[in-house]
Length: 402
Ligand code: ADP
Ligand code: MG
Image (cartoon, rainbow, N blue to C red; front, side, top):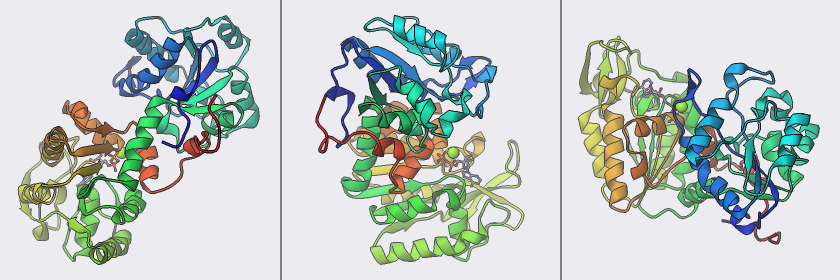
């Protein structure tokens, strides 16, 4: 990777500001999925082992610049403390005299967690004074918050310009796997793109067309492609104003020699709810008052055949309304298929909040080569865009190590 990382840093005795992404789901004051906390542990342990004084900082939810008791980081601190086997204090506020005192009292190898950065509106505005106040806490800056790297905020971009800055180990891992896909994937390379809408992922589809050998399109967004093929989709989720985009993608794929795999049979349901009537039918026979909610068996067989000898797979977006068990078969079958592929040596990278949730729920997350912790950030990366939180970190080639 061309960015300096924590491995290039001698952190002993230094005060290190580490931006982490602890934006985790909470219920009744408890963390319900600690994946993002666990993902930051390698960087935290690395710095701790070196004897750094670590100031952890994150946002949680969308408090919009106001203190919100339900979005305090205390439950996160509690989970982190459990994982590390030592108590990690959480400050009452990201700013203030008490916080400054607590930082001054940190000894080598100790750490604390600042309260939710987004209790201050200045965070999301990338306010220079706020960035300066955060920078004043530390000697160096480490960004391990890949999930927030597509946002230019005070704690992701402003502060990085004020302190010597380094990528954390999670940030490094995310960049390595995602840039592998775009720059040097093992071939054949297939992308499976699903999820709700074409409009959310049109830029990813376009960018990937230049990279992949096979592109599978499923989920709600496939319905717009079925419309483009002249097939009726009944009451299914679809975007008629995106049919032209879908046609353009199909034409470009043909020109570039990319094999497109679309549904040939689908599960349709009377309503998109539990307990409703449903059946599998050919994709060109969707009745006017039904909804497409999942892929059919023939389509799954076609996908497995098209992916039989792939070396690299990117999966983004569920292939059906997976939240409803009867309509989760396609998504689950592909998850199992990819887990088996990964065990045979295929590189399988999964991104997207809902896709990752589906795989985690199935207990297959550990089997994949890489599960991205950033939904929006991984999408923007795969669109080929520069992420401001990454761009601002120092390049290995132009700047020396420290
Ligand atoms: P990700 O977060 O993995 O990027 P998206 O947010 O794009 O995925 O899409 C996930 C949503 O897409 C899920 O809520 C799922 O129910 C929905 N979805 C998938 N297939 C369909 C479909 N055929 N009709 C309606 N919604 C669908
Ligand atoms: Mg989503």
